Amino acid sequence: MKHIEDIPHPEFHQPSSPELPELSDENFYFISKLVRDKFGIVLTEAKRTLVMGRLHNVLHEMNMTGFDEYRTYLQEHCDTQTLADLANHITTNHTFFFREPEHFSFLSKVVLPKIAEYHQQMKNHDIRIWCAASSSGEEPYSIMMTMMDYFGPRYNEWDAGLLATDISTKALALAEKGEYHESTLQHMNTTHLHGYFDWFEEEKFWRVKSMLRREVTFRRFNLLNNYFPFKKPFDIIFCRNVMIYFDNEMRKRLINKFAAALHPGGYLFVGHCESFGRSHPAFEYVMPAVYRRL
Image (cartoon, rainbow, N blue to C red):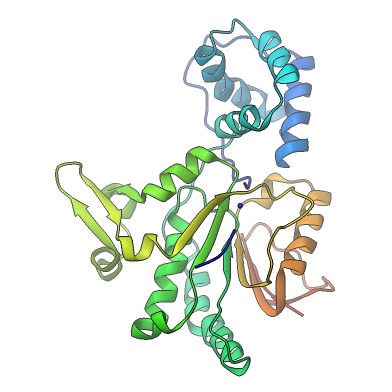
């Protein structure tokens, strides 16, 4: 294991309280511009009430009376921790294990055999995979289970593992714990459940076994960073259901950065609503939401 470091993966919830401070046009514009510039998330006018609901908790925690005070605070304290707190409140994470199962089937049946063959020809065993939207951990652990299933006892012969990044420190903390309520695992097959999780009767949750958790490196990383600090290219990148929150220009820039971060022949998995056609100069369309680096 040796990999690296923030990523947007937002969903929004309806506010729970009807008595929310008013979010003026001026304050909404300031917050939406800050969120767009720092995280790439586009907050349209339709999201105003939802943003009010999400940030109401911030005002309460900080004993603030309204959004004027919060805006002043952001202007005066726009440091790393303040932005991280904003990201944690604006973004939440909706995901589940083996989401879009056809991707995992293709990963096992086509991608991993090709990647393994490539590295054997190159006479190295260094398989590099990046889950660029790790959220609360379901996706990176699903990728790792698929890889460990494929290689079986031969897995330890490979210098493998997975880098998982997200912009939300709250989501990353949940992912690193690897603890999931039984209701979130009800659709998982029993082979994966009992092979990769331990049941804790008193707490009523399943925890990812240490032999799986130690193969995933979680780091905070912002996909809007101009520079991706990776020393070597990746074989596989998963970035699913994130770019739907970006505008077209940000999406294009990110796809180009992914192309630069993949070695020729490497694979990019995106969400089904994020496919970018069949004419990108750096990618070959393989199947819905899967591309191969040229």
